[in-house]
Length: 444
Image 1: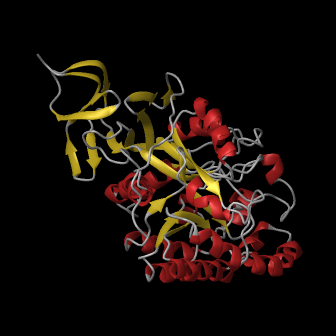
Image 2 (image 1 turned 30 degrees about the vertical axis):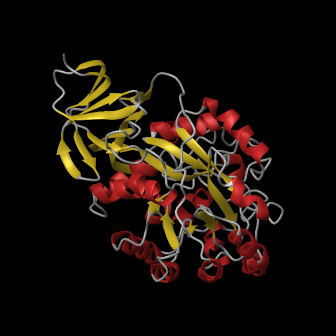
């Protein structure tokens, strides 16, 4: 009797940790069960991937879905809908909501709300001076992916600007924490530059290279003192990359598609749509980020999806809020870079699935391997199309990449064996679940 599967994916080229090959994928009970020629296998459902490339499911380790607190900007349902349409199977969501995610009760509330999410998920616990001593326990709660520290002010009220509080927080952690590294004292000193200019072109002048580098140096000094691992988010400067490359024993590194794609000239073209923290910078810094990608310094790509409404973004700078949509465009933008020879598809897979699994000790996710969650992202590498605001599922309804012509498009998303996007369209129900993490945490 032939083996029976719930889903068989056929006729696609598969890119996995072991390279590229053509084989069928058999899925049973939500997990990868078999690989090879499954033409004669008994299957409840088949997905013909002719002409498509099959990737491990893309994981976005930095999104802000704004729920609870700002449903006009985003909800867990709308944000996750955009995620799966963009080929993303799982997200790590940030704690700067209203109320802040800083207690077990706030985390439980988010997990309850997340029953309507399309993708799998985990939530960061926000670090404060008030919960510093409890963070070692809070970071181990089911559904928590770790602790997030804001060293510089951004959207929300989470801020750790002094070294004494930062030291207390780090001393109590066991897992790798994620950090927004901008120096708050310097931001306060330089805000008048943004106010005087009154145009988003001043954003990288206000939040300059020294603002980022100073915070990253402060962070690594304390991390080394306490022997803790840190994940430095959305790096934007050549100087930080050089510094972080020399501290690989403690620090992992994230970059975003927007910092790899936009540059300071785009403030003139799209105004506050290009405004985020830390800022889009001059092209020379962008090229330094690409060198770090090629050199293996960068560990993961995160979208830093952080939506605001266009009405809010239309406020005069610097009263306009920083942040842009990104979860739905993360993969399309990077596929275009693959098409243009900026990186290989294998490197993209490492940055979006294998990297997140390694860094955050995800259990059963991030690989096409027997026994792992059957998460797949199916893409057409040759599709030529134009990104439009109308394609964006976010409540905010816009993208900084509106009008950009690209090559490469996500067309299918499979989460734990459930086909949630086929031919670029949603199907079925929202079936997202909390992610699991390895029970035994690595030693610091």
